[in-house]
Length: 148
Image 1: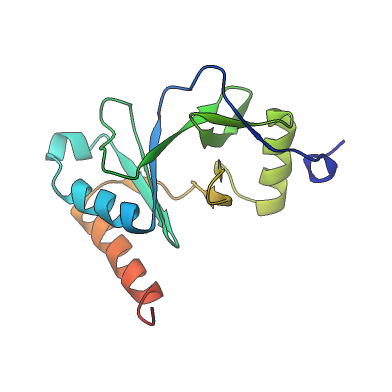
Image 2: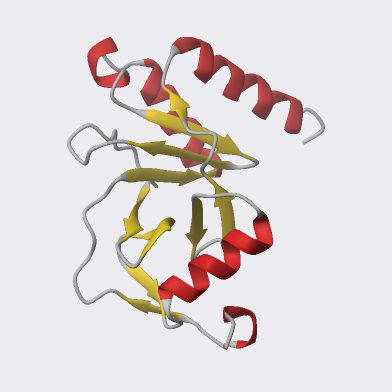
C-alpha cells in the first residue's frame, strides 16, 4: 500500500526528537534570517541553510541552532533517512513508506514534511551559512515579494 492511498494524519510524538534544524515561516523566517547575520563566524560555519518561498530552514546541531520567536524545529526520522519531520509531530502513516513515496514524487531528497503550514520542502540545497548565501536568500525573497 503506497502512502498516496493511505489516509494519514499527524499525531504528537511520544518523545520529541532532538532538533537538527530550525524552521521558520513568513515573518519568523525574516527574523531568523536577520539573526543569522549576527552570528559569530565560527557558529555560522557550522550551520547550513536553504530558503523556499516563505520558509527558511537552518540545519546544524541543537546547540548551534539560533532561536527567534516563531521558530519550530525539525529532525531526520530514524526510519526514513531522507525525511525530516517536526520534532514534536509525526505522521500516522509508516514513515519509511511515506518517505519513499515523497522522494519518488518530488524526485529530490532529503525532504522536509511540515505539518503547519502543510508543506514539503526540498533540503537538497542546504548550503553553508555565509554572508553571500544569506544575501542570495534575501534577494530571492525580494524578487518573490516585489509585488506583495
